[in-house]
Amino acid sequence: MFAEYNGKTAVITDDIELSRPYAITFGNGAGGRHVYMELNMSVRLTKGDLVVVVDEVGSVCRVILPANGQPPQPRGYVSVNNISYDDNEIQKANQCRFDNAMAYDGNGNEIYRINEVSNIHERKNGKQLIWSLEIHDMAWINESDADYDFDGAIVDTLRKGD
View (cartoon, rainbow, N blue to C red):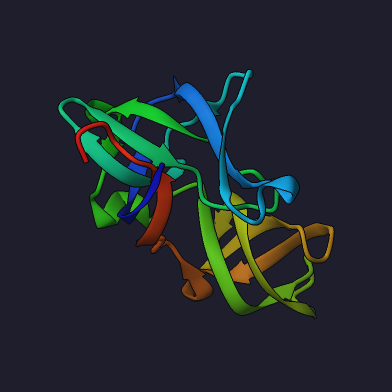
């Protein structure tokens, strides 16, 4: 069973591994329904990585990694001690979203407008160096075009007791 939750953006505060990783997919043979899938792999999170907190129960948070072009989005569990909701920390995160942002080459020439979630490789002079999945190359984006807010509705498995 699945339910909709109000996801809240947070940032990872230590290098950790996602506990009990899984994904929610849309199965072709499932009539478009959500399908729970265990991930038999380790998912490393680095200090500064963004996550969306689905819910908190006691000292554990259920989180989802923001979509970055590599479906399905890994989900799992982390300790509440390993996340921060502080906006100042979130603004320094390793990932962000761009909506119709102009990408520039290393010489400052306009390349292409992008709409994606990207990893930030470097920050310099009000710009961020990212690997763009849309243009398949490194590009500079204005820091002012970065969006770190991933709050919103998240479909996930129903908690026991709900």
